Length: 426
Image (cartoon, rainbow, N blue to C red; front, side, top):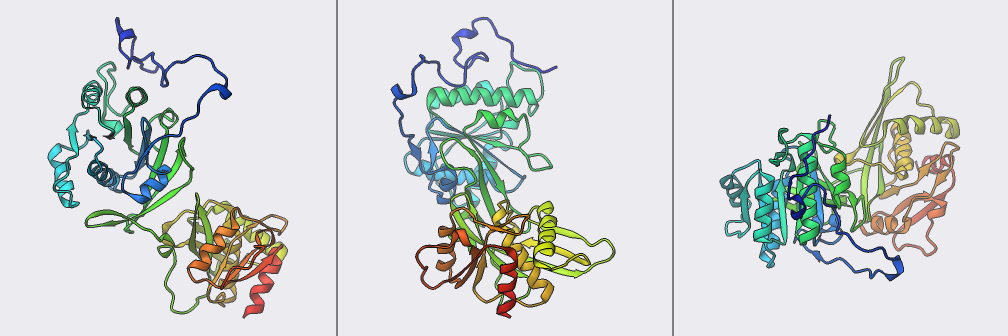
């Protein structure tokens, strides 16, 4: 049994009724006859947030942002609304979890004493919609969608029916009035957005706010974006005055070793359109009859597969070794281009000899031992050269046609070539 809002008498006059569509109705037309218009974006003043959104908030767009409690969602959005208000945009912050005085206290702590952002402490959907219609802000934040409820339903706030219905009404309002709406969503223990999955389908953009509790750095990752690229990330640092954008995120994920150490290899990974340098660390230790395979920030199953490829095609056996692999800085790497760097870090730790100074690597390793190309290899190499790295081991298909100044590039086709090249360096 799923609770839904009944169609009330006279509801046809209500443009937010349960039977109205998310998009306005129109006549049937061919694609060639429809005029395509570029969407207007409103910069938030937070460069890293604008990067993830694709350039700024879209008029009439609906953004859903989720993250762990205390990660900084409300802080970031309050800073963004203050920046928008200072550029002449009309803003509204609807809080269902805090009182107005609590929001004002946070604004004062962030140094936003004279902020003119309008605040409404309300959880009833009908009152929120009436306020949005009367105030007509350019950007509105609902913090959070799980606290909003509709009188048309008898279930508790945060239930599947309430979340779905309230999000649908707010989305219809945004599309019909042009108000940009940002919804804050709770997450489950597993880290997924709480509530029905249809919530993510209804909105235009889905952002995840990530970060380790012991680290001051935060990542905002775009999972869905109808107006921009997905898998873009923005990097922030939590300070006493709120969240500040980090212009050079590669520095976060690189350990500062005075001398090269065994088991460390720098990877040039790609997060959306941004190349980043991440240090991959491996540690091998004598194990028992059942050696452990543990990876942090990388896929566990892929690590087991890579160890089998390393043994079969390069003759490097790790059957009696515990293998631990870690991506420095708490970053999560999902692309297969990390394979080569992982194997080189494992080989370095096993032999107890460091890789050359200023060395980077990337490339996917197949089950047959071949090293496959990674997308946008030129940009990866240029980013590494810009940060002072001088030697790169890459797939042959990614070898640049023109040399990159200050960098020696070694192109390989198979994993055994890579292992042999590293051995020759020591």
